[in-house]
Length: 108
Image (cartoon, rainbow, N blue to C red; front, top):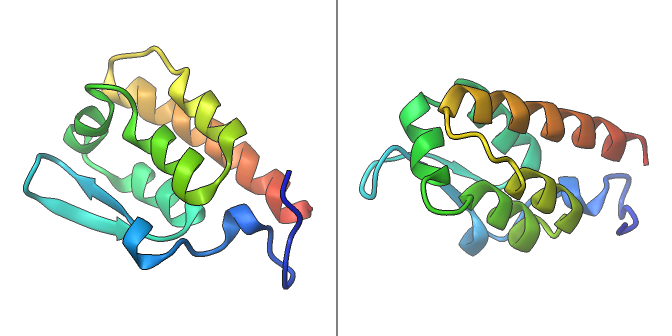
């Protein structure tokens, strides 16, 4: 696990602008641009089911962003392993995994 720098764990730090997560309901409508893991967690809570479905229809965009932009391969693999297809069940599982991980990272 990466060590924290400046009092905040690296996985909880802001990603570069060019690596922002663009939360969408379809290929054209961006409903949020996310730069922090904690902000993704909040956005998933509030996102319409269409956005969850859009980002998990072919693979899992959330898992990819967490792994590559945030750098948290462990959480990315856990999110990517969700096999549910119902957007509300996917949301619930992601929120649980992300919430637990964020809580742990805040303590490190």
